Amino acid sequence: MADTGFRVALRPGWWLTQGGADHDGVPLQEALALLSAIDAVGHIAGACRACGLSYRHGWGILRRFETVFGTPLLITRRRQGTELSPFAQRLLWANRRIEARLMPMLDSLASELQEDLEKLLPESGPHLRLHASHGFAVEALMQHIGGGAANLELRYRTATEALASLDSGECDLAGFQVPQGDFEADMLRYYAQWLDAEEHLLVHLAVRNTGLFVMAGNPKGIRGVADLARQDVRFVNRQIGSSTRQLVELMLRRLDIAVAQVNGYENSEFTHMAVAAHIASGMADAGIGVETAAHRFGLDFIPLARERYFFAIRKPALEQPAMQALLAIMRGADYKGYVGQLVGYDASETGRIQTPREAFGPEKL
Image 1 (cartoon, rainbow, N blue to C red):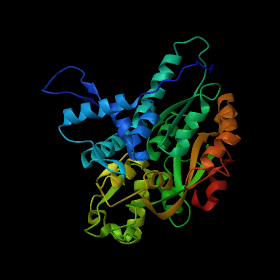
Image 2 (cartoon, rainbow, N blue to C red):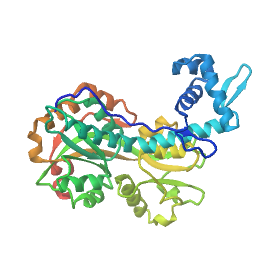
Image 3 (cartoon, helix red, strand yellow):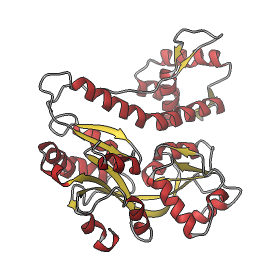
């Protein structure tokens, strides 16, 4: 597909209205960006520079929204810099949770819109359809493609949804992950209804660390999955159908712990970042996801498993020019270098092609 020269992007936004007004309201994004910068640098002057605002304009934004909310947004102490008020901290964490929840959905919708528009343009050609659970390596792949012969239409789906889509011909690549070690065979039995050792090939994306997220310093003294059964531990799960949730269930079953014993088992988030934001904002004590997300939110991480993430494809698809172009990007130094620097990721085999039996052994499929 020819490079169109444009990329569609969608972003969440906040608007405030007063008195039941039915107009669009006042956008809060500039204030949120400024509060985030103040939180990072510890003073208003540096935050204004980071946001490209004059000091006077920055103060004007803050004073305006302090009036709207009726409460201070900053606490300034002589010789100690500036910090966010408890209200502003809650506001910022709410924004982070919203972005973590919505960005994958918006990215998926943007990809769909991009594809719809490109179909109306001259020189529109074949494209690849990727269905995969949200992850940092998948997100990075979309950023590294940037149009051209390997253009991808992305839909974020759970691993089971993605494999079912490949089975029904609704996508060309299906992302799924399998834990190494004790739970590999159990997970493969779960996928077996969609994964055919004779029809499919596997493209290795990355190996990543998956484990429990807990608050910095681990105040609840959580050491592993067994602690999720404690009544004083609030858990946040991944959504139904996700392989991460399936892994938690397998681990609990191994310990003879019923899911009903886990406080918050039915509370779920769609992404690793949303789980991390949930815990960092104090809404839960533990969650599960990849180490990168814990690192980005300043959480402690308790390793549980190493997972291999694959794209399943049908054998004939390997010969398509678009697939070969995609593999060239995945094997390139830029992409492998980026994935390799993600905390908890290993990109040493990125782009490797295997049969399912080569990847897992003939006895497991």
